[in-house]
Image (cartoon, rainbow, N blue to C red; front, side, top):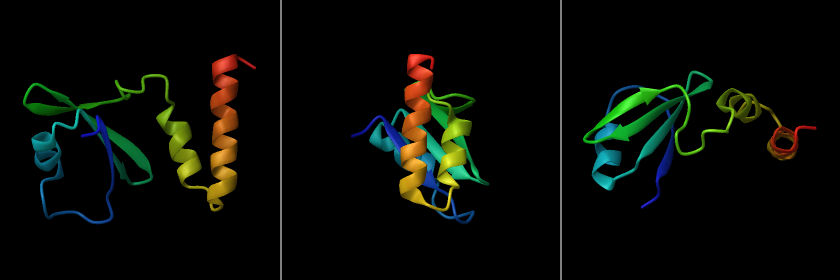
Length: 91
C-alpha cells in the first residue's frame, strides 16, 4: 500500500475515511477541502492533524493548492514544475 493518499472532499458525511486509511496502513492522508490541503499523519493508532507533510517536508502545500485551482491543467503542471525547480536550485 502507498504511504500517502489524497482525498478530494466534495461533501460531508458518510464513511470515516481515516478509519479506512488506518486499516490500510496509510501513513499520511491529504484532504483537498475548501480550496486547501489538510494533512493527517498516522501516529501509532491515531491520525494527527499537522501543518506540513512529514513525507514530503519540502513541498509547499500552499503553492500546490494555488496550481490545483488553475483553469488549464497542463499550464499549471508546467508552471508548478518550474517553481519547484527554482526552489531546489535557488534561482
